[in-house]
Length: 290
Image 1 (spheres, rainbow, N blue to C red):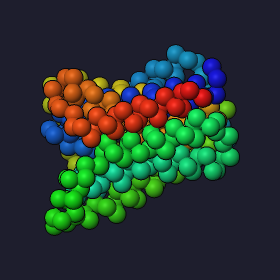
Image 2: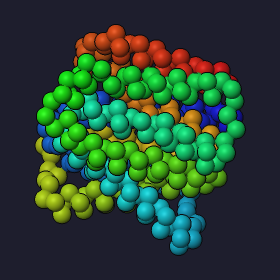
Image 3: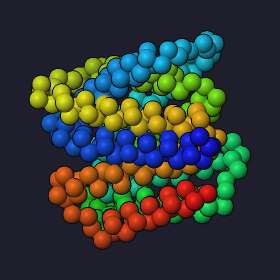
Image 4: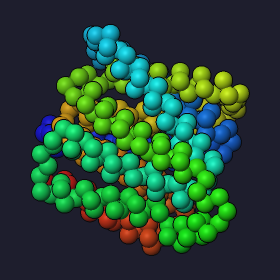
């Protein structure tokens, strides 16, 4: 598989996985809360990764420093999720979603600059198109104006901005860590530490992790799709030197969520969302044309 093909596969897989995960999480978050959904999703993902790693037969042979790096990746991943959800709980999603969505552009720029990536002309042309499409999709101008006029418009901005910056840096460093390394066992260890971090913080803060039996299936779907996204992302980073393409494509996860909501929940797409979807697809086509 070519360098660009691996990047496209990894980024598109992460986009689809996170989009599906958000779609299935709509029900569970409303009933058990975001922290319980996150904790159980992490656990389900760890089980699936363990099965995959066992079947692959690949093992980690890292130095003590590399094991510490993996543990740090897991702690930061779990903590940044909790900070993001804390911000969303405080403020207006119409204000906060575009802030976090900008991680795609920040991480892509960081990866390109940090590693001196050589990007084909079509990729350079397509990447800003994709990023603009992402921002148009998640930012509703009318809702945003209404939110900014209301009380507490800036609530949660600090948390979400911090989560965005941390996650952007995390993506760039995860890309660097996985290059020429086996991604599956490394992702298992990282996600395992992230799960322990989320559960430990939830217990320490008195958050309940109990869920009704009828929610086991949707929670399993959330975890499976989320770990699928991380696996695709890690695969792209491990098998391609175009980490900026992987990071940017992963940020378009709102696209499959909207399409699935339109098909299965009969939610109507607005003209703005339809335009944003077309812009993202056009940007992806430009990148693929390279």
